[in-house]
Structures are given as structure tokens and as C-alpha cells.
Length: 534
Image 1 (cartoon, rainbow, N blue to C red):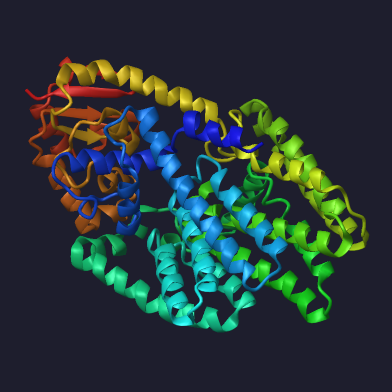
Image 2 (cartoon, rainbow, N blue to C red):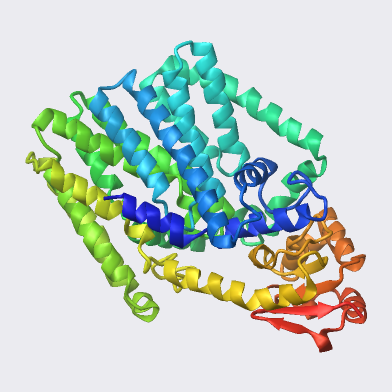
């Protein structure tokens, strides 16, 4: 049943624009001689290297290239799922191990397109692998080393993914305290050592590490916590619960697991520990202050794992899956796609009503779950799980219900990508694929355009952010990025005015660019303007 949606993601869905941003900048700078370690993409070196290693089909047509990237990522998810199942089977019943690992793997494989291959998603993959390795490998010291390496990678792909590593370590502690302590003790120096190695390989990485937070002027790290942050966080969580309803099922799964606990201490732990895990992940969301849905990516496999555990454990004790949890799963699997497929205008106007219905349903079923001991058929649970898991990969699935990019759907994104390809191709054919360019454009434009960029800042993020975040203009990387623009030897200037128009640059830099490039003879390419050198 799940082969069809998986095939859909491989053959049709493609990659998210942020992932294309990274691949595009690495490719265009790479064609000019820069390695992934040397190129600035507002992601750490560990993430850049992982994506570069996975982009083995970069010379292929874009649909094939993206299918290859997805297949490789799905193979990694499969390996992690098998490893997690093998590790859990050493300390838990086989049914529980299978259910937890399967739901974790499926939640990762069928993640929303805006999550897939983002740093938070990749961190969740590494974290699941760390738990599996730490439990599966027989020798404790070797297990702690392998788990520690994977936990280090969990952190290093973005740094704000530290909570994901802590959640994995907490889950490991519940299952095997000794191995958790060893893995944590090994993981910290391994993480610091790998970070030191990245700085040794590319010293700028230390500077970029210190300056990254300055790029986000809306972060509480820059302006302090506000009450509006709480409202924004609530809206982000509610949007995620509608877009990925597995997250909405988390409270009911916890209630079921608490009911199955035989002692009061265990029941309290089931209520407290998941809340702490969710809390630390949400803390990272608040710190970033951008309220993108993919910042919650780690909570989706976490919720799926607890759903699988609740169903397996209830089935073992009562002879079938818990009826209350399963019926809500079926309802959300059917209802969420219907309301999400509504027009953007309808969703923007009815968000409060839909959220109220969702919260009321979850609360009501959680209360029912405190008393209901009845079970349902396993086939209903399987169908419900499938329905919920595939909600984010429906063509009509939006990025958010009524928040950021509410009008950005899977089908709309695919259509936009194909249009960009068609509009860019005639211009690329005219100037030649090897002509060097200076990009004043978001990185996914470089991904589609593909011409080499002789600059370690192919997408000039520091300069672009400096146009509206004054603090950025005092950074060394801003000056280095600006110098790259001023001293360019590129044959063409490629401008995406909606992202960084020439007029938004410092006046002297804009004047020099106009003197160097003839935008009166520009070649139009969709939302790009391609200006030849005078």
C-alpha cells in the first residue's frame, strides 16, 4: 500500500527548495573549483558534505538527479530502520521492536517534502541510527562509539539539532541506562573532535559558526523573548498537527501507554518524559524564531514511534489495537487531506474553526482513552496508519495550513520547478553552460541555472540579509561576500529581483555593477534577469 506514495515521492515530488539551494550552490561553486568545505551555505559543513556525497547524479537531468538523491536517502532510512529494529529487539519484545522501528522508518520515508533532507530531518535519521547502534552492537564500548558518532552527526548537521540528540539519548536511557551513559560520554568528545576537524579543514567555519545566528534578525537570541513568540509557536505546532496529523495523535498515544503502565511511577514517567522531549525540541524552534514547519521535523518520527509502541503494547495485552487511538487515526487520515486541499483563501479564513475541531477531537479521544478498554481489528489500525502517514505526500498537501507559505503545495511546487527549467534552458543554451556568472539570487535559482559561480558565496546570503538586518553589515563574512561581488570576473550577472535587486546593494557597489554589466540588453529568464558583461 505504501509503495505507491513512495514511488510518487521518488518519481514526481522532487526536492524542497532549501535542499535545492544547498545542492545548487555547492554545484555552481564546485564547478569553479571550490570544495563543499569552502562554500558558504547557511548550513554547517557536516550537512554540506552529506548532501554533496548524496548528489551522485548531478550531471543527470534534474528529475532523474532528484530521484537518485531520494532513493539514496530512502536506502539510508531503510538501513537505519533495520538497525533500530535489531537494537530494540535486544531489550524489548519482537512485536514492539518491529512496530516502533517500522513506524519510525515510515515517518521518515514519507516525511513532508519540506522536511525531507532538511538538517532537522537528517538529524532525526542519525538519532534513530544512534539508538539502534548503541543497543544492537554487542560490545558496550564499540556500541557507545558507534552511537556517539551518530549522535555527534545529529548535532553537527545544524547545531540547533542538539535537542534531537538529547531526545535520542533519553530514549536510550529508558531502554538501557548503562549504554546511554557510555554513549553520551563518548558522544560529547567525538562531537567536539569532529567540530574541531571541520575548523581545521576550513578555518572560516569557526567564523561562520559565530556569525550564523546574526543572519536571523527575528531570533530571540538577537532581540529577546516576546509574547508574540508564544503565539507564533502555538500556530506553528497547530499547523504541523494538521499538515502531519501523526503529531496530533501523540497525546492520545501517550495516554494509552500511561494506562498500560502497571505502577504509578511508570505512569507519571509516560506523562512527563515525552513532554520534556517535545519541550526541548520546541525550545530550538523558539530560539530560531523563524517558524518554519521543518523545524519540527524531529517530532514526527518520535510521535510515530510512540503510536507504534502504543498499538503493539495494547495489542499484546488486550488482543487488538486500542479502538480510541485507531479511530482517531482513521478520522485524521481522512479529514486532514480534505481540509488541507481547500483553497488558500478558505484555509486562511477558517483556521480557528479547524484548529478548535482538531484540539477538541484529540482531547475528547484522550479522555475516552482513559476509560475505554476496547480493541479494534489490526487491519483497521494498519489502514489508519497508512492514511495518516501519506497525508503529507498528497499532491494537494500545503506547506502549512494558514501560516508561512500556505499557498505552497506539493503540486504547485512541482509545476513551478518545471516552469523554471523551461524558462531557463533557452538562456543557458545561448550563453553556454560554462560561462561564469555572478548570482544575486536564491540558491535554488543557481540549482536550475547551473552555470559556475567563481565565489565561495554563490548565493550572497550575507549581503542579502544585510539589506534588512543592520547588524549583518558589521560582520567579516558580509565584507568578504561583498568583496566577492565587487571583484567579480563573471561574464554574466544573474539577478532575482524579488530576492536581491541591484538597487538594494550599497550604492557604490550597485553603481560598479551597472557599469560592468549591461542590464539594458538583459536576457529575460522567468523571474531571473541575465545581464551580459559590457
